Image 1 (cartoon, rainbow, N blue to C red):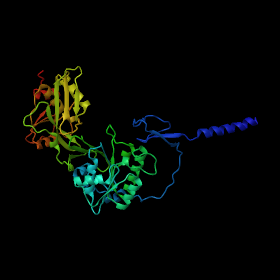
Image 2: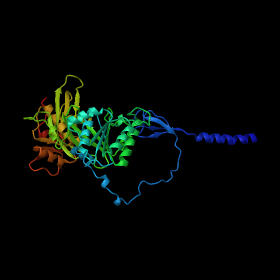
Image 3: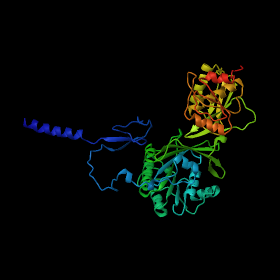
Image 4: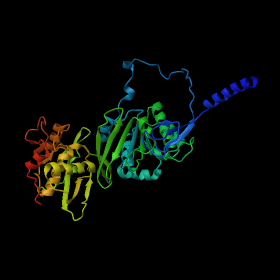
Length: 471
């Protein structure tokens, strides 16, 4: 009995020790999701190979109260002067940001290689710099002499714009201490590495550490900071997804490298609306803002051509007049080719199906090509009606009137649905000289002198212009 009694407590103690033993934990480097076991794919963000072990099981700890950095005040007594907008000197970028940059704000600008991110930010840094507010531009991808040559070419030389080529975070912070800038530009976050952390620059841990250091110094010293980020093959921002949550503003710089048009689109903005778009034109002397870019998306011709139709799209709050082109040609192969440029391919497939089933347009034995003019990308459903009319006109070899715009979403039942901002769209089309519009029912107030035809479905729209195939 005594031996057994002595053995039982010992066994219980061992079992309790084993039950409380620390277990490893795993965390996704993209979104921060945690799990007690390793997985090859994160079930939260669906990223592969990002779940890594980051330490033993965490123990519950009680955090004692510590000293506060500043006393809490009634919200009405908080000083807002420190959060006033400061213009960047580039009107189109100010439009996207909501009025300019805020001291202490951290902005992430992402875009494909060669789209013009560095050129745009070099112009912003030069326009922003003043004796009272110097600017520091840190490049980790090019040498200082290369950036100097570009600055001379685009006219971005400024005595109060300081340039440094660094890839070390501690050296970058040393430049900040020396210059004391009001605006800091880091190009790019994937090329900077922290000496306190192992791993190559651009890794998940390094990007998180570097971004965290830049955000801390921006908030502590009130420095407006613009960070350049790379993008992956699918167009999303490279690095941990946590980076987008930490910064105040996320901007996407878009554009076809073979076209002149560039768009800066706000995806997240803590200081303004996230639906604004800035338009720029890429020139030999740099990137220039386009306050009225509609003319870039139209083809100047004397006579109307079959297979073209003009629509008005809303990019944020800005109406843009754009042209949709279509080409329909007989096919000798069992599976005719379908190609699109500047339009959503899935939506174009839907419009084709509606045209055949609801509109009676025969397209099953033809090759079909659709595109936009000027490199603009039309993604909103309001361009459906224009695309359908362009396709029907190309199939019938029948041109539409030259001064016509078509606005409306096409449903699977063939109905033409209402879209937002019809009055703003019609006002922009009227300003550019268009006299006739095809719109969904109940468009609201119509500009004086503009003839508006309301159509309820796709068949009614096709009958309005006798778009019946001649084949």
